[in-house]
Length: 168
Picture 1 (tube, helix red, strand yellow):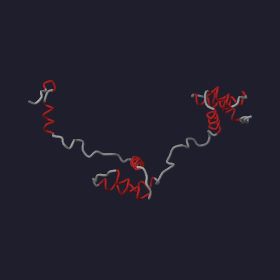
Picture 2: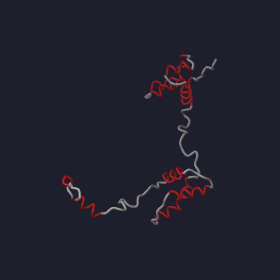
Picture 3: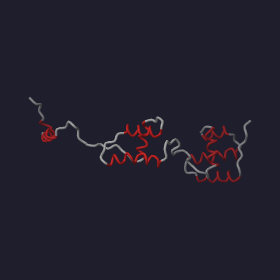
Picture 4: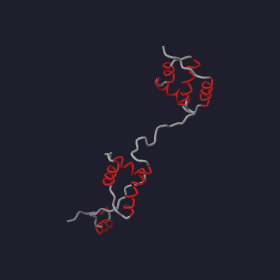
């Protein structure tokens, strides 16, 4: 037989308050995950059936309710970074000077220098993310096609669309 869930009087009072002030279904389920076993004597399986969630969600809701005063959203951030932000800025500073002089930069040389600095291979996407994180973006040097002929384009603009005839 499974252990019965134990809740302090303070937790039950907080759950009642949360139930009464709940504005979302998630808040209501979190409060009922505590109140149903505490007041109605239901086990976790019955509680999950009533709430329409899984058993693990009931446990997760109880844990979240008990530890709601502690820090939230521990997910996110840079857990697998290869360099600190300051090291990344120092690395990009050498490339920034070249870019400011009007040089054309491409990602493969930056990636090769990054691999050399780290001493191990890394995916190309890491380099792209590093550049994006520091506000680097792709800039097109020109907006016209290299084989375009402006005089032919201007002549075409003067031709009415309804009177176009093929060349004979």
